Length: 433
Image (tube, rainbow, N blue to C red; front, side, top):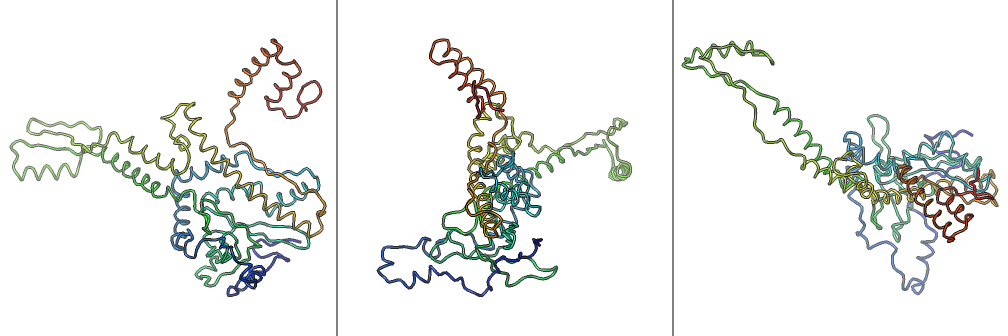
């Protein structure tokens, strides 16, 4: 059965009416419990009014400002794209030991309507740019097919959570723009069962995430204005005018010469001829703005610090050699690894949802081994030269250990292959093919 991504698929639960309040069986059961049962318990969320979410209008403006900066500011674009390059530069895979489960994963992963091998880059980019992702699943109950779509956070007007637990979402108010010239006033409440909400850079009692650009947007604007001022100043530095002095000239003589020179001003590179009565002098503005390198670097450092990357990640490599750059990049690499772990959880949730749907539709056995792993490449550049040098040192050390009887040749051979990165070994210590 074909699935229309623009409309809910047959079998997908329909969203409740906007005015309907969420129904929670376990909440009603707890409310009916005796006072003794509730004694000693407290709210999972904070006290009312203590959530850390920004004002809706401010949050909406932040989304607009972040997207505008990403589209128009090269540094903002570099911050977001560098994150995606490091987190997903080598791609991501979901592998399972059970062949049946692997085929079920591949059906979902490579579905033409999903293309997760490509869509995952958009998910990571928008997660960093907007600070959150709303992934809605359309499920065909008869075939177990699951189609995933990203909802624009700008059009998710509200996130309703359980009154007792801010970390338990109940439904989302989806209010996309209507036809040209119209505005949807009510929107649609989508149950949390259909949407997976992933948010970064948020406090524990906040409902919405924050963009990776949130803390550096003011400095991106200041740096852009500083660059524009530099362009204007450099243009002014190239401007000049002629100061012409006429010795003993009367007022009417000066006016006549001014009209003549305005009608035919000297062109650049031209040669002027005049007698001792006239004196010509080129005048340039003295604005004293020759050395402002430190000002620009200070602004870039603020941006790099807020983005959590060293300055040479933002095309500023003049103040670091290779060894220093490697040491400076370690905190950024750890940050990217942490983002990989978050993205692993996101993708694991999507695959679990797809496997559940295929089990429910009978396309996958409920007794199948559903274990699988989501793997990324390490977020570091290929350190081939460093690894070769290290391996040469290990080879010398193992040779010395063998000569002195500290290790047998077989032990040294096996350890050498393990350190060389060969995981599979066969008899004789040679790597598996």
